[in-house]
Image (tube, rainbow, N blue to C red; front, side, top):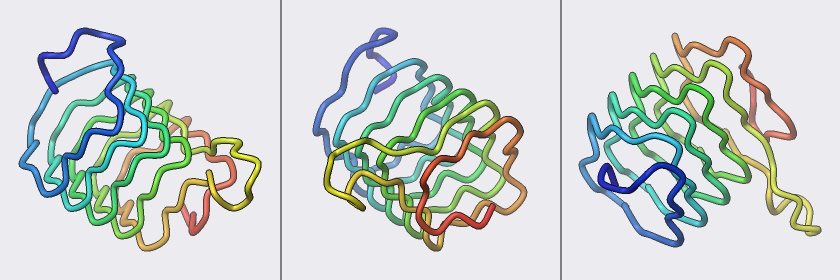
Length: 128
C-alpha cells in the first residue's frame, strides 16, 4: 500500500487482519476495500478517500487521518482512540437505497481523537 503513487486507486482489495501498523501513504483512493480487524495503529493516511470500505473492528489508535474522507464506510467497533481526523469527512454515498451508503460508526471508540473541523453528514451511531 505504501508503494502506491499519490492519487492511485485501490479497488476491492482485502486487508482483513493485516498488520499495517505505522504504514505511511497519502492521497490514495480506496473503493470497496476491507480492513476488518486490521492493525492500522499510528498509520498515516492523510488525504486518502475511502468509499464503501469496511473497517469493522479495525485498530486505528493514533492514526493520522487528516483531511481523509470516509464515505459510506462501516466503522462499527473500530478503535479510533487518539486518532487525528482534523479536517476530515464522515459522510455518505448516494446509492438511492437508504440506508445503504451511510457511514456507520456504531460502537466506534473516538476517545481523545482530534475532531477539529471534522464534517459529519448522515452518520449512523455518531455520538461525537
